[in-house]
Length: 449
Image 1 (tube, rainbow, N blue to C red):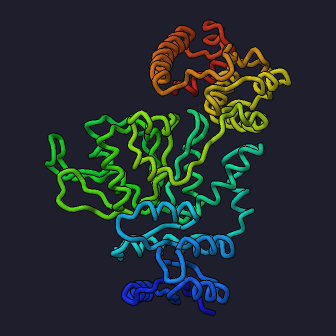
Image 2: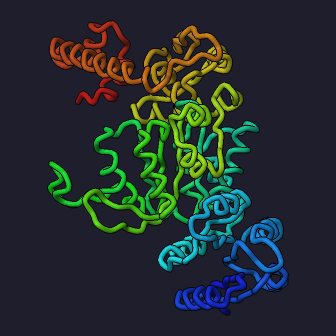
Image 3: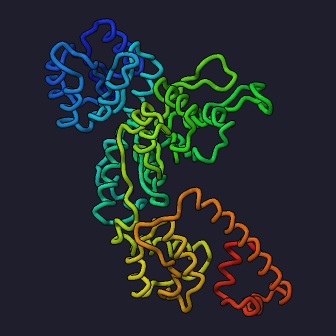
């Protein structure tokens, strides 16, 4: 039985056909060729191909028509477009039409080999099996979340850049990880980076690396985030926070599929899929001139909107069960149950902080509840107007600083109470005015041995 991969190459230029045929043959791939759309369709009807490479311009039509034909009739066959150098508009149109990836003329053989190797890793597994595994990670059975899971499975089979939009705390990084995990790059690194957390002066070095001696403090060569993600996925979270000069360099790195470390003379090829996200409105930022339109056009080939928790309140009971199990296990406590009143209050609450806020509310409620039942009062839900949200990164930073300060104060108080009671936890809890259960949880949370 023949186990070699079979590829179909569609191009009317004999030189290109010969180059691609030789390159793929050296990779131990059987190659069939076609000079036009009609020939290609006939061959597709006779053979199950593992990959198709097609030129943009063909004598009897358009490579995009062939991509759409393959998407419609042979959805399991990844197809890549061969475009003219610098024609990003054609490449992006191809990706939007369902192309797996693209390669520019003159063909860079290393880029081609990377593309082919990644495409051949695509699993032909049953979609239902992959969907079940996704359901275990992205929890919920609402219509909205089922649509997201189905979209993730389709996006995982492509190399198109995806822009993930949604409010803070809605799970954008989780969605990005699933796109990576369900695709052919799953065995390679997934590198998340918060673009707003890198000092502007260090950005170029962090993204592209640097050579020893290229600036003060550069004592050794250092690889950047692109090199760290080579073969895998780079997730640019809060991409809207990139300064304009860095947006230019990022656009070049994405289009050329190569990076130049600070202080280096030559560029290094990188094979990276780009996923990006932000809670801000990038469309509006483009209109205001704060985000480059060409970069937005490049990273927003496909947009995936993650719904806020208030849009999928039917998922709250399942999410609450998951978080209570996780929090109780981490704290070494028995998992409490939610009373009907508490569950109803959670259903009605607008959750401006989304899934992240739900977890924080349940973590606090678990320490306050008595007899392993969380009542509505234990939730301590803040009074808030529906549709308002203060959980911007700017607001979160002072909150995190306050949490850190209060955590240190609490730790000192607990340690002092333990010393006064000669480390009798029951007596220390009484002295602090909290239950023994709450003390046990706080000791675990604050890392007090």
